[in-house]
Length: 317
Length: 95
Image (tube, rainbow over all chains, first blue to last red; front, side):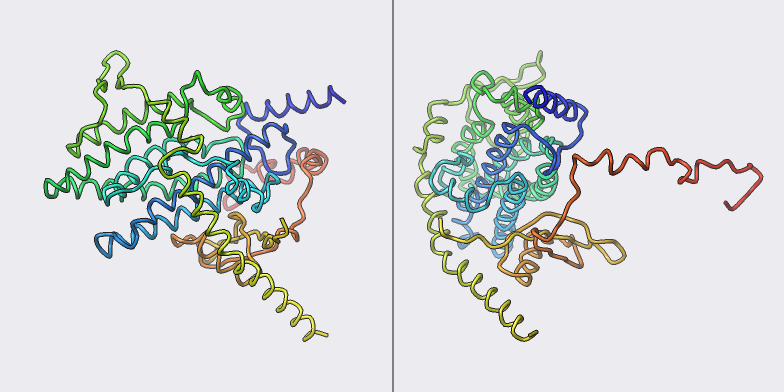
């Protein structure tokens, strides 16, 4: 029995190494299934909670155009959450259980959404920086080994690129505006730069699961590799906007053809992960309230569907 | 938890007239009408479709991947089913 299991695992790894996608009914190691459910649901939760900091500005967008764009973006995020929950459900997770884990605090979501959105410039910075970081994380996942996850990510990535561009456009408009507007943009960059670098997760040396996840191809670059890529990508864009990246140690390194940059405040990172960020409580409470306040709608819709089914049955008889 | 989940539906979308419906994902809805409306919002925000099918997931029956060999391999050795199996003289046109 044990040799059979070993054999299956070997065959499974051979398929992964050959870049053959794994589909829902295929045999897979329990740990692969568990890790994927955790990773995908965590990602879905991030999309859901990610609606909140931006939802904060929908009613106060500076123009009808910006409001329509922000609404569309937030709606996309709800959609991304739904694509991902549905991918996780193909692995046997249930929607109710995933949401229960989010609400109880057992499941995590991206720490970036535990920071407050204080000015309109934050909408620009979130689109430009935060979605820029998300895209770097997500593009490689379009080739991840689990079929439904990869397919969901293809759809997500197509839509994210609008998110990033609209954010950059907000920043550009502010930077070309009055000095006060440019100052707003700089202030937002100052507050979001470091939390965005934290989005790539702990340093490789402190990320024990990376090796296995790379072997399974559910992660295709390490945290530090992506963080470096992000800094190299973003610094020229900040320069174009005339903004200063808030890192005194930031310096071009000719030898490595990339930037050297300062260390993230890891104490802050772990504090926020553990639930003690500026908005952790508020964000989670908003999700729990939405779920509880919507309970009667979910029940009524089911009762209505049941009643209609019975009526149709009576009519047919 | 006493709460009952809305049933799961598989969503199929025809991207334009003349093409077939293709599976795009799934969603939860209380009934078929709501499933179609939700599918419109979740899967066609950027003109991805002109027609939607929804099927309750429990009604989909799938082949077993463990049977793949026995199921599909018999087609392997029947290369005479493909036109390239046959040689046609160069001088013959329209074939």
